[in-house]
Image (cartoon, rainbow, N blue to C red; front, top):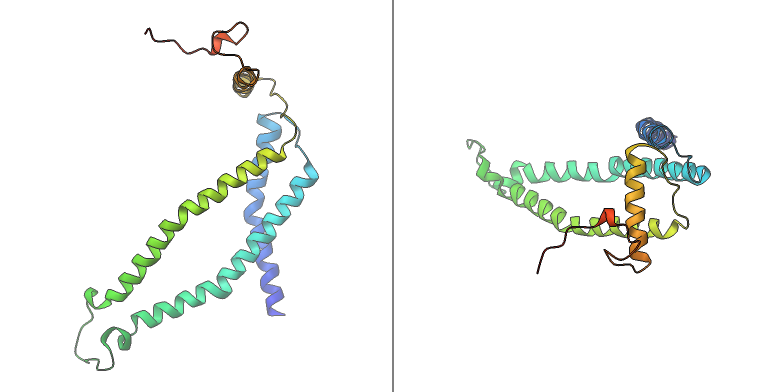
Length: 182
């Protein structure tokens, strides 16, 4: 029963934390871009998955990794580990007595740095999948800076897609870069 209460409280706190982010996304989409929400049912299901996934992740951290970290910290800083079996009673602990703690922290930092490019690769793959899943071109924003940026990006992309070179008739001369003599 305690586990169910933990899951319920974690779900509620995750929902409370994610709702402001969802509100900002909806306000930006509807108020700034002035576009309808594409696939609202899929988006709500996705937000549900995010909330459940984050809640399970947090429960996993609280129930497994944090207790393991506390146990390792206690063991690495225990006087019997630092000084060995023959621990002097009159010795005052100094920073250099905790060499193993610093070595362990350096190893954790190094492994985190090594893992970071893999996380970036996952983010890149996610972007590719999301772009491939978009079967239709997003509707053009009608007004403001967003509309001008959309038009410039899609107009330029369209010229390249039709095989036109810069300076060719109808290639959108307003997007040309100056050519250097030579």
